Image (cartoon, rainbow, N blue to C red; front, side):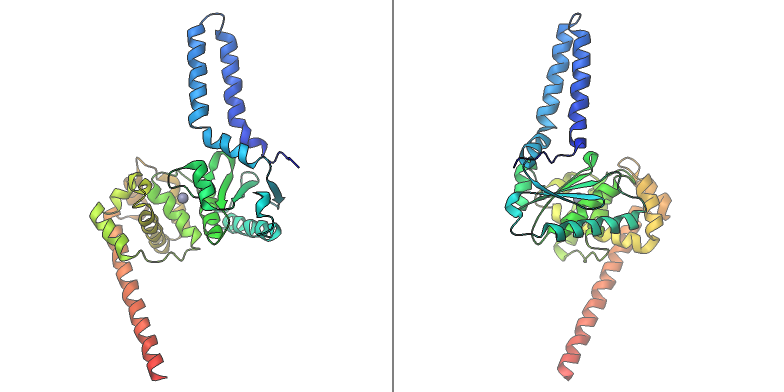
Length: 299
Ligand SMILES: [Zn+2]
């Protein structure tokens, strides 16, 4: 059975654009036909470019099933019905949202729509680039794949929905770092040697203030690992409340200045301290491993 599952908020953008376009056109047609045509062309281009993923998404999910909980609504294709327990999945989603409500100390702005795709490549074919999960912040919606990475990707994208209400998502060193910290439940692993070598070659954390390396297919994974680890270091050092104050104030243009004002140290000095903490962590892990081997040998 065909059921329209899209929440009304999915349509408010196109509805407002169409209403404004029609009003402007109706007013201008008798007087200024060239201007009207120009407005219509701009609107058409806007819908065909920026709105295309949304239109494709709407067409795709129109027949999907749904399951609702207190503050989340789960949408999924009928083909997943046999392989997942929708009740368990929606409970998991609700628990993750509740965790974030407790962390951020505010509820979702409205019910969160979670679109569960069968595979990462289904989302990638819709959105392109390196995108295998996504948060549609204006619509309070996330797109995530089912499978092994479901929960980490869900927590990551939900983190974007919540953190976008605290402060700017730029630079991505800040927003992706926090999303990785949340997806790992605060236990972000140490970046591997390849990531640290890449960071040294690219010029340190300063180079991650621009989105270029985050968008590059060869370096995005390392950027996320580094941003998550650096965020873990900052939160451990200053605490969650002070980190949130920094997150709220820092944007692309003032990141360095806000960083220095918030933490009383420069980004370069913080980077050096973070690198020292990674080395200390590495050494204590090695000692622990040696100790374990000794125990094994003694047995
Ligand atoms: Zn992200």
